[in-house]
Length: 147
Image 1 (cartoon, one colour):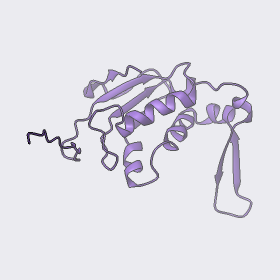
Image 2 (cartoon, one colour):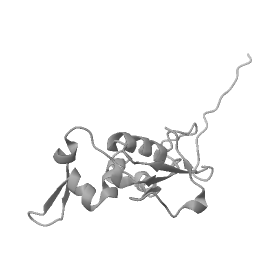
Image 3 (cartoon, one colour):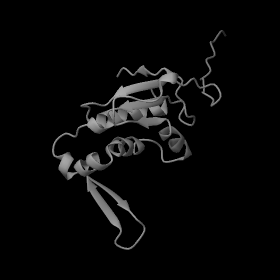
């Protein structure tokens, strides 16, 4: 009996080839952009994606402060954090967050889409957010990511 045997390729941390991508966030919707970025950070765009290995690439996001929200989310969406003290719940609307810390809006959206494990912590470290249109990573020769 002549059967072909195919073995499933499983990526290893040593064999992963990482690329650098640059994305312009000017005028993009926050949630839709965040899903694309999270997919690249996880490595789901590659044919050798393995869930238990960090196969993702580096992502540089430019103009992170120029993202937009749809509907009434700009005034209705709230970001909450707790200081650890009684009565220490701090709230900020999306509009306030874009004024004070514009890159945190996109960072929190992407972080919520990644695994909540050591692997997810390693993936979020490959995300670089900048509020202006320039970045200091020219030595890595990033290429624009095509959606």
